[in-house]
Image: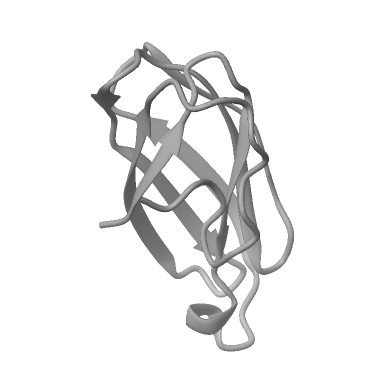
Length: 104
């Protein structure tokens, strides 16, 4: 499980690059779930290989579980779970990596 740091006052995009797992298949749908209503996943979107959600809110010092579940055009389903920690760190842009956000 990967941990990312998020400022509770920031609204940041977090992305999952599924291209290696998809092996030529494409994302048909992408759903985002959070473990606590204090952190909000909104505005989810996807391309054929990447799923993105905008995370807002949260409480400083608190960890949350964020789940991205995709269904492919070939009817396969895959789930990724990771933990963005909401901490007061400033409003930096997320890094551009396999998963968006701020790795800890």
